[in-house]
Structures are given as structure tokens and as C-alpha cells.
Length: 231
Image 1 (cartoon, helix red, strand yellow):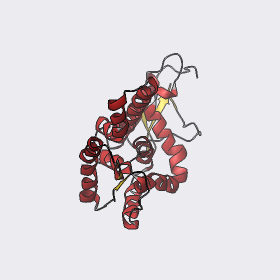
Image 2 (cartoon, rainbow, N blue to C red):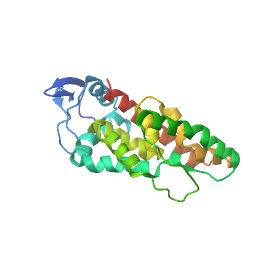
Image 3 (cartoon, rainbow, N blue to C red):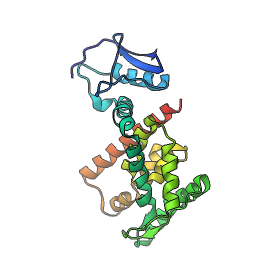
Image 4 (cartoon, rainbow, N blue to C red):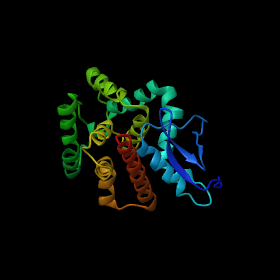
């Protein structure tokens, strides 16, 4: 849409903070009040609105998107979102290993074994590892513990965590990001390890390169939003 305002700024409202365009508070796409828990998120969203040119491009406003998603989509179906995120633990990327070649097996072990060890030490959750694409059922106790961890997160964090697990294919990686064990670049490399190996062996086409770049940008946005939630 065409830019219809001159100034965007963050400000206090009842129960939190919001963003004002020429003094008027904005709403989410579903017309709900955009009320945020801290000034850091509100200020970042105000900056996104302020940086728009003649046309407003939502694709350049990831913090706004996460906040609106939390209010419009996560809050009304919180339990379903928790289950959807937690389900990644049942088929987690880091639990499915290559049978060959040997150097890929070694790459996966170096990158993924420390994450599983960290998960066990931090949360007392042990996940089974298998070779190949055949499904391996995880213990009910482990899956229930993962659900409990995710259920402790607020709706704003859940919006970003949902993207983290979708982008990486791994709840373990998402948890490591949440606890500061991995940054966005490390998480991207770990989650793209298999494809990175293929590219190293056979090269990459333009579509692969663009997809990897887009995933990295999206991952960085999700990590940034989680950090804003903690301020």
C-alpha cells in the first residue's frame, strides 16, 4: 500500500507499548490492538515503519510480522501451535544420520552430537539417533518434556520459534538458539549441513543459492526477534 503517514514512533499504552503513525495507534492485520510487552520491540517496529519509502512493503518489516502473527494467529490457537512446534522433536533433523559417505557421517557427528549432549545436560531429554531415512520413535517421556519446554514460552516467542523449527527442521537447534548456544549463522550452517555437503561435492545452482540466502535472512530475523523479546 502507499505510505499514508509522515512519522512513526513507539509509545506507552495501557498494558504495554504500541506504535503510532502520526499519533494514531496501529492495529494488526486482523484489526486487533498491537500491544507489546516491551519498548525494544515497539521501537524496532516503529523504525521499520519509519524506514518505508513511498510504498509500504510488509516483506521488509519482519518484527512487525512476528508481533502481528503472535497476536492474530498464535494467541487464538496457542495449544495447537505448541503441539506443532513440539512435533519437530519427534522427527528432529539431528537424529537422522547418513549411512555414507564416511566424511558426511563425520560432519554430522561433529555438528549434531554436541547438540544432543547439550540437550540431555540442560533439559534431561535424551533423543534416539538412527541411520537412514527410516522413522525412529522417540520415548514418550522425552516428547512430553519437549512439549512442556515449549509451553513455557509466551506467544511472541512462539511466533519466532515456529519459524525456527520450520526453517531448520530441528527443535533441538531452536532450543539451542533460545538458550544462546547457537547464533543465526551457526544454526544455518548446522541445519543446512546435508545440502552444504551436496553443494561441496557437485556445486550449486542459482535456485539453491537463492533459497539458502533467503533461509538465512529469515533465520536471522527470527533470532533477532527472540532477542528483542528478552529486553
